[in-house]
Image 1 (tube, rainbow, N blue to C red):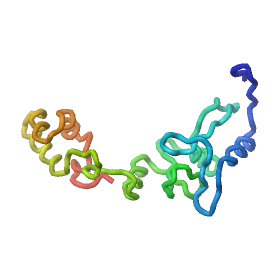
Image 2: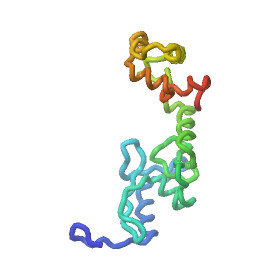
Image 3: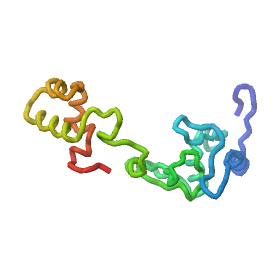
Image 4: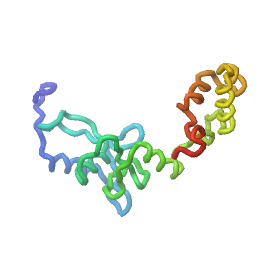
Length: 173
């Protein structure tokens, strides 16, 4: 219980929650986190040590979900309907898998996909050409030269590690 020469008492949940909510600006819309933030914009709250767990940092919206609705099942994310990473309003949050979260972001125009990405060097037609030529036995480095990319890019395309939406012949989301 002693850390750095200071006693750190175990705080009751209501005290922790009162401190948490003091960092939230509530309105008719989003309830915005005004405390510390993760580099991606999510609110971060320093949870004190408890009898059940050591002190740690936790994303604010995940804490709200847990306090309001219960544990977050393994493999699921707490997502924002409002697309505001600092929002902690419970009715703006929902559970979703990583692929559902990505699909939601793409549908809302927050993520680029395939040739829409500003750094993309390939198109769906180029990917089909790459896969056809590789299936015919052409060497990856020769295919890479003709498309202006390196052979590692070709390998990833051929193995289906990138451009999965073209491999299936349809959009992956």
